[in-house]
Image 1 (tube, rainbow over the protein chains, first blue to last red):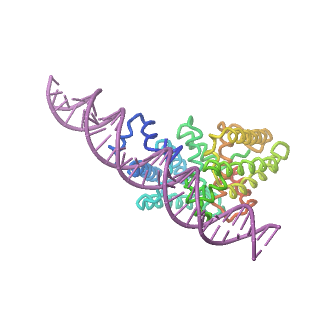
Image 2 (cartoon, each protein chain N blue to C red; image 1 turned 30 degrees about the vertical axis):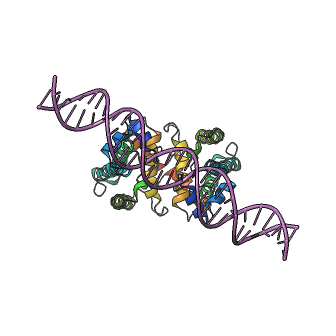
Image 3 (cartoon, chains in turn blue, yellow, red, cyan; image 1 turned 30 degrees about the horizontal axis):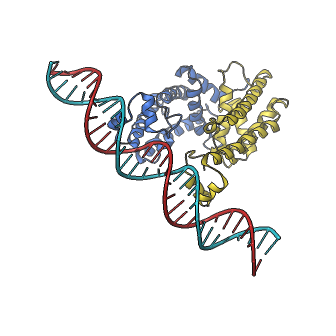
Amino acid sequence: MLAADPGASIASIAAEAGVDRRTVYRRFDSREALLAAIYEARLTAIEDAIEDARLREAPVAVALHRYVENVIALNRTWPVDLADMLADDSVRVRRDAAVREVDAFLARATDEGLLRAGLPEGWASALLPQVVHLISRQQPELSPGQAADVVVDTLLHGLGTR
Amino acid sequence: MLAADPGASIASIAAEAGVDRRTVYRRFDSREALLAAIYEARLTAIEDAIEDARLREAPVAVALHRYVENVIALNRTWPVDLADMLADDSVRVRRDAAVREVDAFLARATDEGLLRAGLPEGWASALLPQVVHLISRQQPELSPGQAADVVVDTLLHGLGTR
DNA sequence: TTTAAATGACACTTTAATGTAGCACTTAAG
DNA sequence: CTTAAGTGCTACATTAAAGTGTCATTTAAA
């Protein structure tokens, strides 16, 4: 619900969850604390997704698909944008570390010939999460595995006739 | 500036523009009116972009590149998200018409063999604007023409080695 | 230079959301 | 059954932003 409107009021969040506004304040000290808990959960899920995909060692094609599948699943569980929380130092540090890990993987994928060289700086790095985010929301009927098939195929080969 | 935070206060908007908060209220009756004017400008630019690209008649490869280039340019001039304004009926109607026009073009591109058939429903339609939006912001040093080259190549052939 | 329009600055009311307090009610554990 | 924990509800204070009014000052056109 915070996906649609990150600035949603505590009242509307509580209403959507079917509980009283006061109950939210009993579980979380403040709005900030509530959001921090959500972003914490997402961030941990991201770290798990990276580790599970073994971005450093697994064959790049395998690692890419598995990472994409994991992130699609966590995007659907925690559909919030970490960009809203970069004010928090701890969040930013962990998020930056995750980004570096994926960037290093993409560099390895380029070295090993999965990705083309000579693309604009940061293009693959920016495109990957956007496409994953998009399919997570726009294709809810696809399972994470099916959606990952589409994402990997789209990223590697595009939408054109082959 | 509204791109980063659509919920920015009038005070912060005015400050960033170097004018007094009161001056904003002299030009626009309300915050709603200010946003409506911005979205109106973007919407008109979108309609112009579609018409200029001649999505219905021009060769699909030519029309695609030109449309993408036009939208990248307008994304940089009016970097706001129309999704925030879908409450306004007139905006929604015009936006839907533009979306239908692009969808029809993508169908033609598929018929004529530029795009692959058998993709998930709505995938190309959703992916195109996202990729265009992304490059508009993430690759500011590329000219609209260069950026369109990258977008079209990425969309048609992907990032993989050929 | 004079004048009219636009702007900046200050003060105010209103509104919406955050966060807090107290009390009645439900529910599950003993 | 009794009790304790959690929840719903109403009310209240606080804060931030929207929106309005007024007046002095600046700016540009005559």
